[in-house]
Length: 220
Image (tube, rainbow, N blue to C red; front, side, top):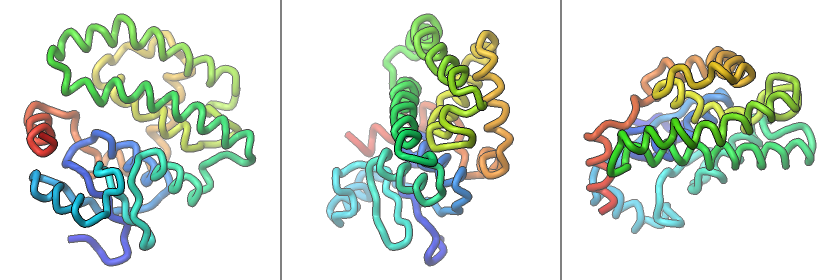
């Protein structure tokens, strides 16, 4: 049961596209309730209500405002929590790096739905990680503060945390040659608000066959 006035996040009972939102809410110290869509009928009812402007989840209801589109939701929360850089230049860099991190992360979001999961994992290890990890290692090196932008955590850091957490699950030794990324991941995991989230029931397990079947059934 959702508490009155508490932000509500509507999505499937899994990480997926909503995980970026959960991590951002956690980083901002905003507690939230979740509503899980479990049937095609429930999704259709949401679409018919007009709450899903682009007919897609996730949906965040916060302070009387209903928001869809992950990028818009994340940025709204980042602005509220002063995690969007200290000036226009830093904000632009946050956008740039967060968009790159999101492109990187989409590869992992698609992985559970790959026709050949094993081949897809090999492709990531052989080609995807060597392409993307050096980019973010260099970004951390160039900024020189332990963060991607400025001197403190921004939503770009939260965006990068998501794929790094997945990599640590799937490829435990992948960051060994990337000391900046290793240190970054260790630090971000220990940020109090994020550590609390990562050890809570809001943090879902990796997608399994049951979750894939559920989502495909609802969206078919």
